[in-house]
Image (cartoon, helix red, strand yellow):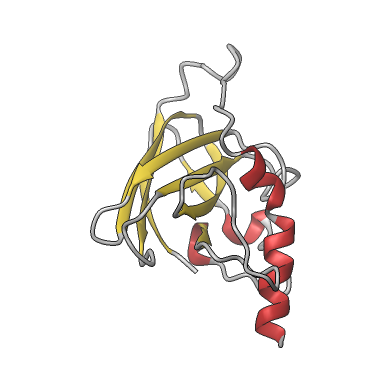
Length: 156
């Protein structure tokens, strides 16, 4: 029961992300600075199959994660139940990532008749959702100036 309740709460809280994730991210001129030279590569593993697309949303603030507007969004093709995507031109700071395995490419999270997600999802630092989505603090990934960081996230 707790596991089902946890999945329902996570699904409900991530609706905003998945409903708006198809909107391309646009960086303002202020965000395109000389110090925005880092990158964050995400290796996604353990997808249920090779169907569809992995959609990754990058967040810069605790206020937005994981329900608000994403800072950047990238998509990746799945091969051998894994995908690799890179967020480029990132400034020094802390970031958090939410993933969706959009199996039918309809650009949103799908649910079963109980309201439980029927598509995979995941968060940076492989934080598991327990009765609520993870916090920014739990999922944050630090990025130093000019750093090129690679993380691995397993799908839930």
